[in-house]
Image (cartoon, rainbow, N blue to C red; front, top):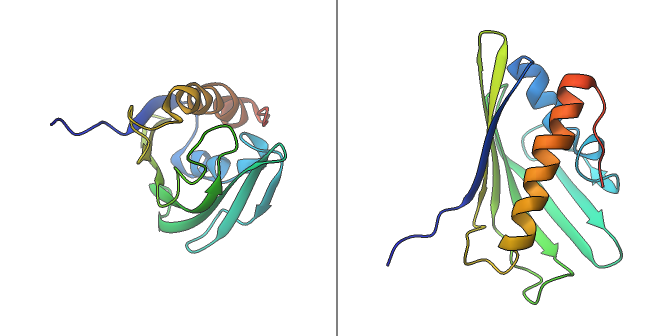
Length: 146
């Protein structure tokens, strides 16, 4: 049986790696307005909330300054699917590489595969938030969080 591929997305932005990682950590400015906690340093914990019944709690489990950050999902309630805890223990991995004044962002949601219940709804959500809102925040200074 073939191992399912984790959801990943890559793109390049016009910014330094340092600025890119800073903007990624400003979760409330590109992903979720309803945000609590801290998301900048190793062992920081934060939560994002959507509507009345959906939240995701994260812990920064690994940070390599201006290169990589891993957000470990410590708890969640995904209100729109049957398995409300589907993301628990998943990792959201951000890796950045700066070259010639631009930075490549590699995003992986480890644990979210085509077999996942939320895959078909989460894939376009992540893609939109990264490709549209995060890029706008990095390049123009203003994202549009949910």
